[in-house]
Amino acid sequence: MLKKEQNDLLTQTGPGTPLGELFRRYWLPVMLSRELPAPGCEPVRVKLLSERLLAIRDEEDNIGLIDEFCAHRGVSLWFGRYDEKGQGGGIRCPYHGWKYAADGQCLDVPSEAEDSGFRSRIKLTSYPLVERGGILWTYMGPPEHQPPLPEYEFAMVPDAQRFVSKRIQENNWLQALEGGIDSSHVSWLHRDSLKSDPLFKGAAGNQYNLKDLRPVFEVVDTDTGLLVGVRRNADDDSYYWRITPWLMPCFTMVPPRGDHPVHGHFWVPIDDENCWAWSFDYHAGRALTEGEVQAMEDGKGIHVRYVPGTFRPLQNKENDYLMDREAQKSGRTFSGIEGIGMQDASLQESMGPIQDRTKEHLTSTDNGIVKMRRALMKAVKALAEEGAAPPGTHPSAHHVRSAAVILPRDQHFKDAAAEALTAQPGRPHASV
Image 1 (cartoon, rainbow, N blue to C red):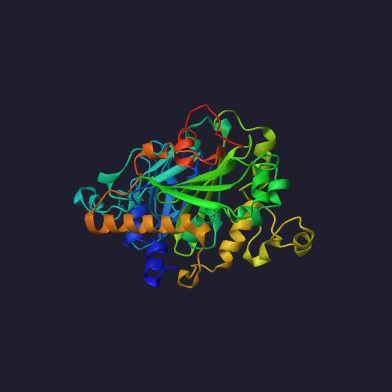
Image 2 (image 1 turned 45 degrees about the vertical axis):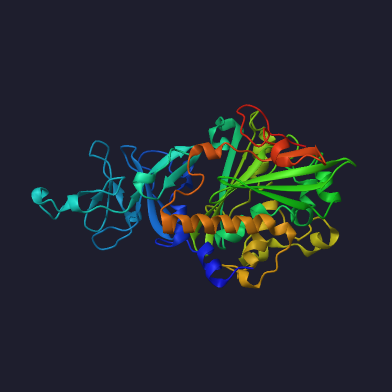
């Protein structure tokens, strides 16, 4: 279990917090590209790491992430309007006409003389927005430490090979991440989905998840995070390994199943009691089929259905996640909740907005969670006390894969699966 001060350290990410400063050194997913589709489109309110921001794409096609509030009287710029094309871009506050560029610089204060220099001294907090892989990414740290753009494999494949979604999850980011690292719950919580979900069923490896309910965890530290290896008995002389990479601070990739697309997540703090659960599917060797894309849009696999017009899941705590006790009793779903994504979210939200880890009792299957917490605390301390660069900010760290393999019992996954755990453009994941 953690001490209270450790739990606070790992769950607080607002401006000036030690973990918040660590998060701000990485490129983070902010929005789906389609949320800001064209010049002059409606601005979008964004809350990230407890900062209230506004994403804009003005009539000149300049995009940026700026402080939501005008520097004059604090009006939300979401109510603002763009100047017409040819007038220098930017967004105007509707209250008194102050105008801001996509980088936050004040361009015009109509009440002040142009030669007064007043406007040049006004600049809103701003962060870059960069489009890659169907996502708009931002970097919120010191400009002098901004790393090159992210190169996660799912974001580099052709569009036809990728599907990305996001949803609001009403709990602290850490308990969501911990669920992404914890592979032992699959044999229980998701056992029926392995048989029925179109994005999971039919994989030969599923039988090992269902037969061996006592997996053994072997966790390997890397320079950029962890490799969480989970082995289950396969044949007499072999193990079935499912290997999950965790990259600092909040990236996980689910090991593959058969020839299904590979799943993964980012768990990005909105504030200390809510997070964005980003979910991606991709196949490195082929385009996604129409059936696969339709299943994802229908909320299958790790994706969800939404309350119309929002990114809030249709199944949520107000309606008890549409829990079906009859389905639970009959065995159609182990928890009574439909869908892998919401099976996870419902239980993680049930812990409360911020789990009290001073009361937990961990076991050997929680080794990945324990090592992840230690790695985060070590990186936070090194950044705060020594100014040490956080691990894994360079895009070379992103060239990693998850894997599902069967290995002889005398071979350790770290060495035997080394090639399978490295991104190989055009080649499918190692899968069972």
